[in-house]
Image (cartoon, rainbow, N blue to C red; front, side, top):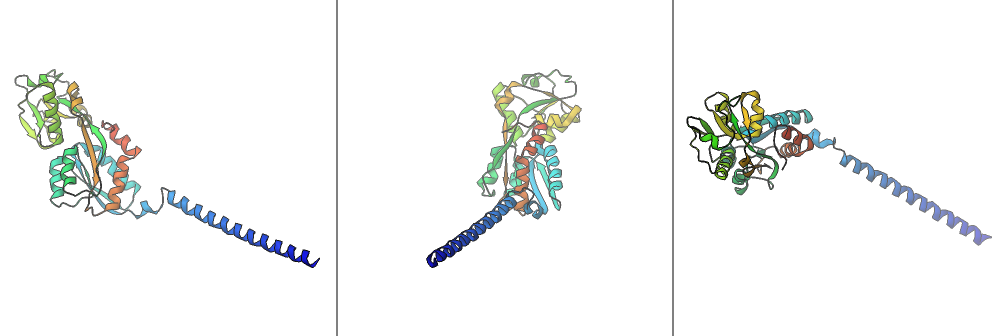
Length: 274
């Protein structure tokens, strides 16, 4: 009887220890689950920590869509301010390699992005986020009946091109070569918006610009598609800069650009998905 009683006591003690261990494991599991949940919560403290100015250097053709995304970024991250510098990608690249402070660079071609990345001024490999295609911008109603690149050679027609050193100019020359067309423009412009403005102000009859710029101009110009534009589609890369003053916010802006919401804004402006 005594041995039986001792065995019963030992059984109870072992059972008690096992139950305690089980409770401890359950508590640890519950605690770990809570931590994991907090880490996966998209509205966690990361977004709340973002503050200060975010400086973005971007190709002129991104002006409308990036301005919209900048406003959205500021709404999502109160306490931040997005400042843009829009222009020709080559000029922006030269400013960055010359030491101009910026967090993000979005270029209109891999070639101009390479100026910055080859200098070691990007913090990671640039990524293509959209593509863009050329279109002929004419006066409203297309009074000169332009329907092809060859029509741009008509006598007396004033045509404007982007300088070949900037992406829209390099793409235009590639398309002209594909069509076997030689042009002598009335001027070469340093960015695509300047070329478009010449047509908007009726200082030129036509210009080779991006489809996105024709769309942004509304009724001020008319767009004419041409088949050779398929031979001159530009990839647009984006990168966080190595010496970014506000790296966290700069990376968050890039993530917005590459998100579904960002793609919707960009494709709505006429950009093509990569």
